[in-house]
Length: 422
Ligand SMILES: [Zn+2]
Image (cartoon, rainbow, N blue to C red):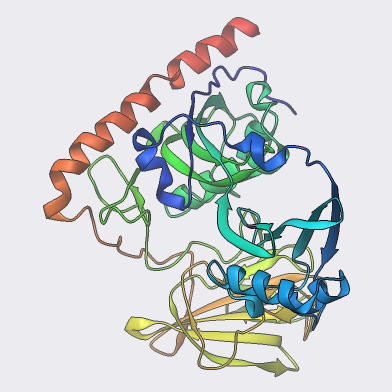
C-alpha cells in the first residue's frame, strides 16, 4: 500500500564547515566557502594509493613506497603534529603523491570526515588536517498513514530525493521520540497523521553525517503528540520535550528492539515447545536473527552467560530495584561483560534462537523487587523537564521550532486532500 496524499517536503541549505554534531547551531558563524573543490581536484603527477593492512605501520608503508630514511623521518615528524601514526586503523588509506618522481605530498584519511595533508618539498613536510565541508539542510514532511508509519514515510513521494538510508533514519527518529507515548506496532491506525522537521548535516557525496528531529507531531486516534528538540546545556547533547517542556523520555524504553512486533505477551499461554499452559514471564518480540537488541534502561550487566532455557542471556540491573533480561540471543555485543555499564538504547546483543526457542525472537523480561512484571503495563515517570534556568531560552526556541512544524499541513488539511483524491 502506498500513501499518495502527503504534501510537503522542502529543503533550505546553508553551508557550514562542520566538525561536530552541534555544528548546526553555529551555521551563522561560518562563511560561505567552496573549499571542497580543492579536496577532490585532480593532481598533476602520480598518486600511489596504499591501504594500511592489519599490523602494518604508517612507517612501513612509507618504506615500501620507496621513501628514504630522512624523508620518512620528515613525514612522520610532520604527521605527528596532527595525529598519532600508531593510532591509524587497519584499512586507512594513504595516498602518496609524486611529481617528477619526487615526493610532493601525502594524504592520510583519519576517518570519513578528516584527512591529514602533508605538503612536502625539498625533503621538508608541513602537515594540516582538512575537515570535509558539510551542508546543513532542513527536511519538512507531512502525511497520512494508511498502513504503517514505516511505509508512509518510506513511500512519501516528496521524500523520493532522500536516500533510502535517510528515509529510514526519519522513521527511526520518529519511532525514537514517540516510543514512550505510542506503541508503533499496535496503536498506529489508518488515518493517523504525522508531520516533522528534520535537520541534517550532509557530506559532499550526499550522505547524512548527523541529524535529528527539530520538531514532530503524531496524531494517533485523534490525540496529538509533540516532540520538540532542545539542548539545555548547549553542548549538542539535546533531547525532546513536549509542548509543556516535559521530557518525552522515560527511565525505560518501551521495547528493546526498534520497529519490532510483539509475538507473545506477558501472562498465561500454551507453551509452544512444552505444550502446556504456563505463565509467560516476559514479552516476545519477533525479529530476524542478528537484529540488534538494546538495553531498555541505563544500568549494569549482572549476568551474561548461556542457559538451557534462556540460551544466551543478559541481565541488566537498573536503579530502583528493576532488572531486565534479554534471552535467546544469537550473540553478545562486543565489550559487553558482567560489570559493564550500559546506557539506555545501547546495543548489548543480537536476536537469535538459542535455548528453548522455536524461531528467532527476543524474550524480554522485567523484574521489580525480584518479581517478574509486565513491562507493557508499567507507567514510568518522565525524565527531567526543561530546567528552570533554561525556561526563557526554551520558550523562544520551542516557539520557533513549532512554527516550522505548524507551517506544514496538519491533520485536517491532510484528510481533506485525501477526500479530494478519492
Ligand atoms: Zn518468551
